[in-house]
Amino acid sequence: MFGLRKVHGVEWSGERVKSGAKQLLYEKRSPEQLILHHADMNNLKEIIPSGSVGVVQGIGLAVFPYDDTREIRESLAREIVRILEPGGVALLATKGYNLKAVFEAHGRLFRDGSYTIFQKEEKDAITSPAAPQPPALPVQRIEITMPSDGLPEEITFTSALKGLEDASWQEFGAKAGEAFTVASAYERNGQSLILYADDILQNAMVVDLEHAVKNILAKHNVLGGGKILFYARNDVNATILDRMVKRADPSIETIRILQKDLQTNGDELKETEALLRAARSKGAKELLGIIRGPSQKPEELAALAKGASVPIVIVGPEKGVYSFTQAIAMAMDAKLHNGATNGWLIMLPPVRALTDDIIRQYNEYQASLQALQAA
Image (cartoon, rainbow, N blue to C red; front, side):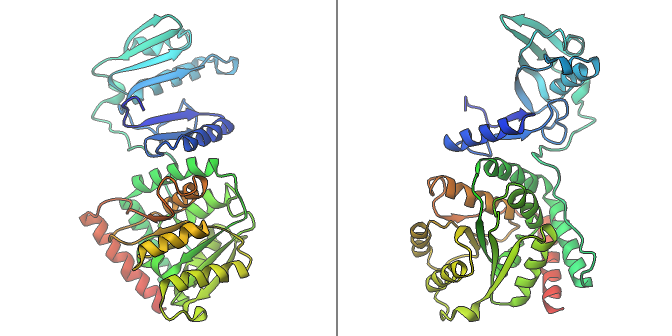
């Protein structure tokens, strides 16, 4: 869009955010480039870092009667100055007198037709390098719930999840923001999910699982009477995921299907077909998607997914930490656009490249998972 690397849209009205999200999805705009925020323009510190924006365009800022207080006017102006990079420009469709005092202390202010134009000084105290701001985060930091009645091994496992989140909180936060945009336009409910429990746990895909269940699936009523089905070789893994989902939302109906019950002799295509039949026989009529590990027959699996109109999200081709929230968002996008964006078989990338810190946290996670499985 106009050669811009990233565009942030801020709106206080939730309905307008939903309307904007639908339009962006209709136009197939990338949620990583165009990010919508349901937020107050007076306080964007948890969303947009200082000195990171080249141009601010504002329409209808500080012109309503209930905004006409000195405190709010100054807060709004200081927030615009904060997010602008040195030399950055704000184009404001407002008379500007509400914002004049603060702007003139930090740069040049003049008018051009119906716009008030502010240019920030090349050096400004609000964004001094001595006081760096946190990186952009479209939503609040992911919260991981410590089990109050779990085994010691479960508490250790949850602590390992917290360590992984600490090492990649910006990335997980960004994925949550993107998922909110997609979910705002996803006006379907009664959806069910099939989760390959062994693959999800093995590939460290549960850091933001509870957050996704609570803030995406439940808050946007995506399930709305649907179910979450856990498919597993090891029933212990299904139990671990079941407990996590129930902590996030006790009202969700969960069902376990074990590999031995399908009797498909290891044929993954027959296994997937049998799993779809089993899910529907248990009341999962409309499927949002399947989240599973790597496939030995990706082309055949893609054809199966397309024929059934069920997105299949593949996790684990690369060693790393994955976002459950991102997987949900990509499945919803496939349903909304009939597979036009990424196809029906979707390869999920890790949330970030491996670093020494991530590798250490990842190994601690695997060790804690093995201890929990053995408990």
